[in-house]
Length: 303
Image (cartoon, rainbow, N blue to C red; front, side, top):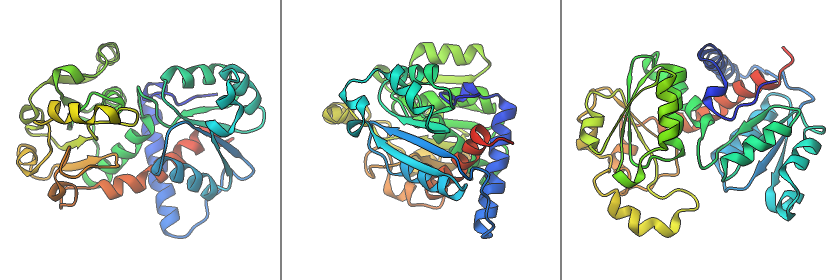
């Protein structure tokens, strides 16, 4: 049994297999050909955090694969009343075939997986968001071919998305340039652990240098969920970390722009970038569905 708590939970070969399956599964859906390897399977979805893309992509994906998804908000379950995570994991994993968790503390998902008898998928924690990177790499490769050896520039907060891009540098073999303010750098322990595994990651305070000759520029909101009270402070700190046409011009002429959404036009990204010809954010959002269907098949299919 495998869990998917981090991109480092799968090998590079397994990641490549998942993306190959994602392409085939997407093609079948577009051609109207049914693909239901998870018929009779049930997915439990425990959410502490608000969601649009994650919830819809997992629910729709499980339905399209022939299975059923149960949405469980923590406030409507015994978890919200203080039931130990270990007990919930033991019980729920006897009733469903897989569990998706979207929460705050990364340790919650880790503890749940430790006591679960079925695969557990991290659908976002404050530390990482690995499902998003599967979709992002899938999207890049649809447009530009293999991402191995290419340069990705992350501009902005050293948050869970930055951490997942760091882990992805191990899994997929791209170069990663991160530009962030001093007080908002990625977790150093995670960064050094990834470097020890071969990740090629540079860290700077200069967005222009990070974007130089990049094949992909990507960013996220300056204040993530749970940080809304820091908005004014963060706007000052990130004032020089705005992805606009001038910054895109530092990258390769055919560089792509990505954003995991939701986006704040006029803050972390200019409207004429996210809505411009280099942006693939809508493909990226759709591909959450296809990449996660391939992940579910990989973890839950008896084949």
